Image 1 (tube, rainbow, N blue to C red):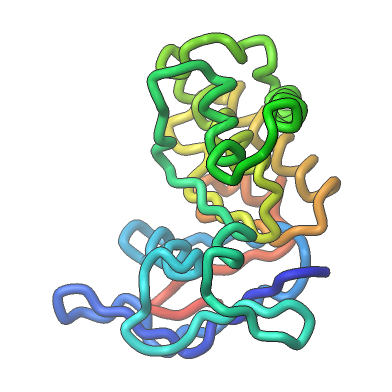
Image 2 (image 1 turned 120 degrees about the vertical axis):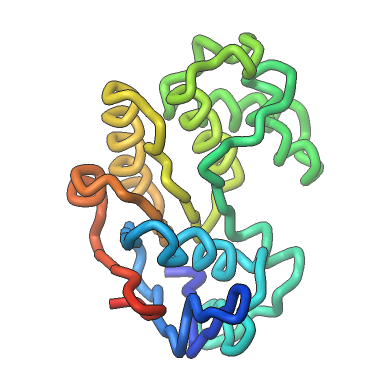
Length: 215
């Protein structure tokens, strides 16, 4: 496989209280890693730290390609993607929302059209590509966010509560999307979720945060 992630002895404190203490984990196999734990256990913080959007107070986050440690630069950031629980939506069409990341990366218009339409087809939203994204339902917005992430072809994909506040129909669709992603892509997918049924259906590896460590 390509990129792998190693979390080494990280510590994180908030208001003087420990959130993580000597927490370590290796993500060195492709597949879906499910991260569970009670509210306040640090699931979202862990994803942000791993996605290099937040720094641990101590310890290291390292990405490797083979045996080579990768510098934490823009090239690495373009190989990893974090989708937040609340998908940021631009006041424009679904197509343009999904195309945004490709445009800022300098892709040509014909390639953007090809990749965006493929991603929207994959998440079942191609028929809504010209609809204003602000008019989508919560579940459809989550699916659009997944399309926006997938169109960038990340080697490590972080999903924070992808089925939160979503009806059962869209939950089933998102579940199917995740299963298809892991069948199609040789990627690492790390998902924080409270949904046990979703975790059982999609996960290859189950991790649980308790008392500042992963088990």
